[in-house]
Image (cartoon, rainbow, N blue to C red; front, side):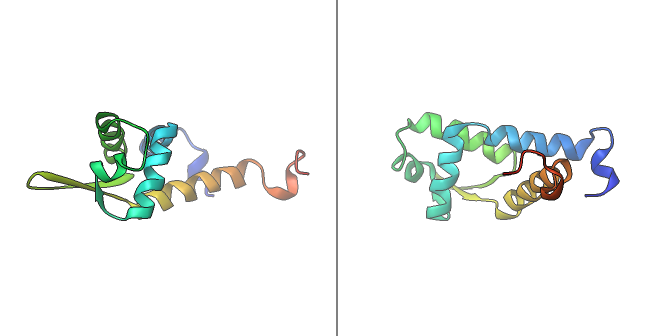
Length: 112
């Protein structure tokens, strides 16, 4: 990582923190898995795979869409959701970079 990642938190850090907060719920992780197996689908399709109410799934999808983790498209009476693969990869890369910066394998005293 570059020196910029060690600077005072800025917009990029706030953006990643928002994405991580949107992921920080077990139901949302389950919803992401359901979306990954379906591609693009409506809320009803996700509800069919999870033991959650439609209103609960809808609220979680809204939070993830606001964080950019899923895309949302409204067609007449139907709303479709899909994973935003690019955004998810970016979040994973940034978190992976932070882990590497904080505890590179060669310097980690807790490595087994």
